[in-house]
Amino acid sequence: MATEQRPEPFVLRWGIVGTGLIASWFVGDLVRYPNGEKSEDNIKHVIQAVASCSSIEKAESFAQKHLAGSGIDPQLYDSYDKLYADPNVDIVYIATPHTLHNQNALDSIKAGKHVLCEKPMAVNAKQAQKMVVAARERGVFLMEAVWTRFFPLVKEFQKLIHVDKAIGTPKRAVFDFGLDMPIDKAPAGSRLRDVRLGAGSLLDIGIYPITWAALALHQHPSRTEHGADEEQPVVTSSLTLNGGADEISTVVLNYPKGQAQAICSSTYLYQSAAEFGRVEGTEGSIHVSGLAASKPGSLILKRKGEKEIFKDFEFEGFGFFYEADAVARDIRVGRKENETMPLAETLRVLTLIDRVRQQNGLIYPQDDE
Ligand SMILES: NC(=O)C1=CN([C@@H]2O[C@H](COP(=O)(O)OP(=O)(O)OC[C@H]3O[C@@H](n4cnc5c(N)ncnc54)[C@H](OP(=O)(O)O)[C@@H]3O)[C@@H](O)[C@H]2O)C=CC1
Ligand SMILES: O=C1OC[C@@H](O)[C@H](O)[C@H]1O
Image (cartoon, rainbow, N blue to C red; front, side, top):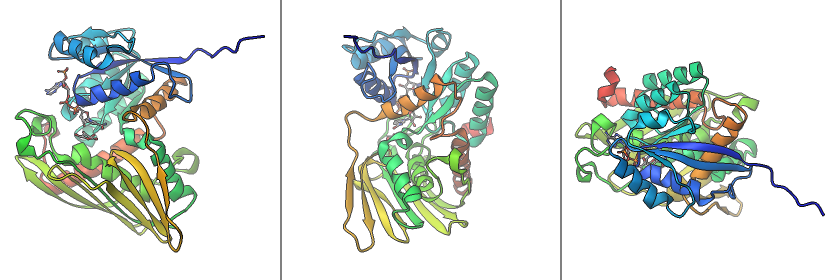
């Protein structure tokens, strides 16, 4: 009797730049299923290298804490440049504060590496545009790591709205991301407080409600097949600044073509309710709950005159494997950008955020560069 052979997996070798909070969540998820158990597509992620710009000890301690026992033994570096030069690294995951993303990505691209860059891809659209041009010229993959877009719940959310038309025509979206971590309590020099590192709730967490508004009101799930509606909404906004960084943001988006509006808010002063957002349409509404707007866990579909439908999407881990698998699928076939998080969408959202910042005098030192 012939034994069934599992085909060789597609192996993607990651280089991790920065050893802070998000890097630990990301690698934790990737080593959770080291042999592609979670992957539908026979993909295997390997943490090939980890670099800390602080010290080799910091890289060692990161690997010890987050990779020990996983069977993965990454190459450790005390500089990002050494990691970019490592021929065994296929893709660089940039997990540094916002204002460093631009330089880290340009350096990675120059070294011929694919790049997955944490959100926001840059502090402004001008910087992001330079990154896009550099990646295209070098012929490497580039994506902003808006991981939320890759969750099965989000795919279902978009299908319900745009394919099934379950709530009729979507008219209004209200999404909030609040965290109880006031700027005054953040350590001096931390990325949450220091404007030189891009501090402020809008760039850090306000980006998610703006994402939800787009998903709800104007983005078809299979954009390239059906043609993207790139309508840039009219923006009205208000920011409350503390020490030059915004602690509260409210952004109202008006989509004249769709006769629809969104209210997107963020704050560092208060934890959002579990139900962090809803979209209302002519026939009903969809309510989304979870740990935060970045990590939704369940949704409720309420259709007028019908029983509510609750859908649970909980899973183990943070869920970064959905994003990582999507990136691997692209790289496996030579795609240079991702359909779910296209570069045009990164630029559109950052242009919108630039507008909000202009309206409210939120300036970062890097805006002059
Ligand atoms: N997708 C998501 O859900 C999340 C995304 N993020 C994004 O990830 C990025 C990093 O956030 P987070 O992990 O919370 O940040 P941390 O401050 O925890 O970590 C950032 C790391 O970047 C490196 N770094 C390089 N230069 C500096 C510098 N001048 N100051 C501080 N750190 C520096 C350090 O690593 P080393 O010294 O080892 O080089 C540091 O540990 C942000 O852009 C954020 O928006 C953050 C949290 C969640
Ligand atoms: O999901 C998140 O939660 C915590 C924030 O500081 C982070 O940047 C964001 O992406």
